Image 1 (cartoon, rainbow, N blue to C red):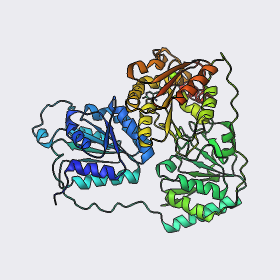
Image 2: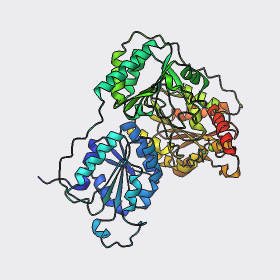
Image 3: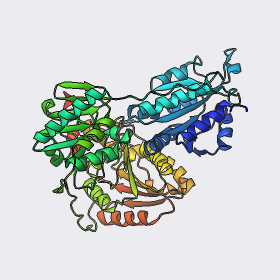
Image 4: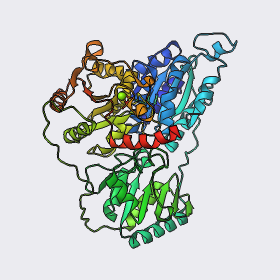
Length: 544
Ligand SMILES: Cc1ncc(C[n+]2csc(CCOP(=O)(O)OP(=O)(O)O)c2C)c(N)n1
Ligand SMILES: [Mg+2]
């Protein structure tokens, strides 16, 4: 029996790995692949730009465990670099497929369109922002290379890059069995000792807390974490990049801990704990509130990246999954009585004519959120304000919270809704970020999808304004609520006051067949508590 062609094999492997949709913009170097894609069970989702396709693939990957984007050579591939770097920085497993000039075309080194240097340049760029790359230019190794890259994607939970010369699509490959992918394993002795020591410390502890981070999302360890929280009766806070690792309405949930930037109540509970069990959290400037986190290493147990550190010593080769599972087994439960750690306060009735504020906006959204909604959040004050937002279910909050690329939210929500059609996205986005990629709403409208977009219209780059004011923070005033006239159908609303916002929100939520957008007019000097604290800290740094 004939072996599959390189393109068919790639499509089969993608589908077997969980990809049902491929995002992207066509171009002549990738058209042959698009033809094959259209004839396959996979569906192509066209976007308005390549970077939004890659953000969409990232959002899809965060929901499905893998996403894919297919672009043309040079102009298309270079357009996805920022978004793929973001997926790399945030451990989101995206397959980047780029068409390329055929091998025969490349032989005489011709000057052909979209070329920007030696033909090897593009792969070299992607080598720096992916965990594996391959040029599928040899039928002997193509299948093996595809398998190797997909194995790396699963193992490291990061993007991979596959370059497909356009004359290799229909070449039949050779099914050389790929070596068995080795998954990182725990050292049994180190695991037992780390678990024993942790249990001893927890039994002695009067007031322990768990601080859970991004690795729980990416390794799919939400069940294991919840089991441990319930078995051990230990309250849990999340880092910002780990936000929604546990359902945020559970009485055990303490809120987002972000050093001096996060809510005081959470900070107090975490920093006064006698044992902090940090699970899958990374120590970056965002999650530590620009390194204002005050966590005494002597009280810290930190499991992440294949090791466990307790105080000043370290157990190597202890995988987070094994550690969590073993702890959950050993610490057997009795019924927990949770004094609600951080209850939501009731929303006062809207006052007619009273100007909208960010705190009112978040309080309203907290009341409106339902378990069948996800929140996809951009960079800017909406992200800081979202610290206080409580999503119902696990992993229902997506953001580029560490890499912090503006323009993430609208396209990432497209990928998220296509990956999880039962979840309606609530998109939080600043006016500046919306001007970058908000037109991707057009694709939602075309596909009959129904996100609700909240534009935090504070008339410019407020986050930057709070650090350093200047005319460079001013942007054009758009009628965001009228965007449907150009790219629709989109139901648009303008809201300056509390009562206008309540009405607009209800209408947007009640309209289920198309996107809704609320242009929320905020004062330029209004800011979330976290942004005020950040500005105080960074302002001192900028001036000093
Ligand atoms: C792609 C990109 N460019 C620039 C920045 C730097 N930056 C961070 S926040 C910000 C302002 C964002 O403005 P807006 O979306 O309106 O949100 P706001 O801060 O006003 O709430 C800028 C320019 C960035 N994070 N990402
Ligand atoms: Mg703004």
